[in-house]
Image (tube, rainbow, N blue to C red; front, side, top):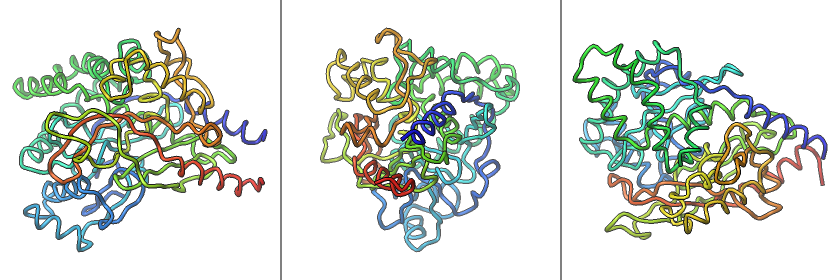
Length: 416
């Protein structure tokens, strides 16, 4: 239909026209409208406590202790189970979070402003690797690190960003793609690039040399630091494409460890969900698929803007690491994803594919017609609370979400 094609062009034009800038770091309760005490925002579509997976429940218990709502983990589990905490998806509050994705009032969030459209998106600061809250960690080490992010790194980044006037992100992505990043599993280049951008301002605005050294060391040693920045960028880029009548372009993909959910531009804020699938990947020593939780996290937002699994050709090392095949096969994933998208991004290109633009604008019709589900690069969490990451891999979005959306758009447009 001409209506759909025109609507899809408009949706993708809005995504491509975005000007995302990292402008601030602030406590979530100060900048996320509607976020309140004893409320936790989580990854994925809406879900109740009794249907949550182990890592999500474990992270929630840790967050409750961190916020001072409970004295210990047992009391926190009891509080959550009794209805003492309100749960909402990040996506309902212009926010986003990796893996369990928890956002609470006192956590610092990075603020990305889309200066082309005036909207903002929020994401917490990446905690680093190992036992962390986003993978369900909740012990003293995890909570102490969160306190340091809140009390030291967050305010330091805020001061530095205020001096810089903000850091433009599109050019960093373009360079990262040429340096081996795909911005989901591999963020090494972009993490280094953003550190180079902000380090002078961190130094100029520091009031304590020891804390400055801690901040620089933390960012420098955290290969995934840019992931959370890229996620907020993705949310800020796709939100202006919501609500375009007739558009079949996906504006959100996310998972809560139990269900996978998508939103489609022409269908507003409706969720289309299906049981989430298990990742296929490589495990850390001592762990196997038997330990793994089904896929979880809001980070698939980067695939909706052509990164992650859609840009696998830019990062052949990731293809081998996540069990996707030989590094030489990385281009296959990108070429396949081009079959289910509306356009290529001329600003984000992949040198190894003769500067092929990353596939952008997932069309639910094309997903169903081709039978090619979006490929998502992902981390793997242990299924039990409190343990953390056990591997990394790739996962396919469940086809049922896209089938439901196609039926819904047909009904919306009264198409047989």
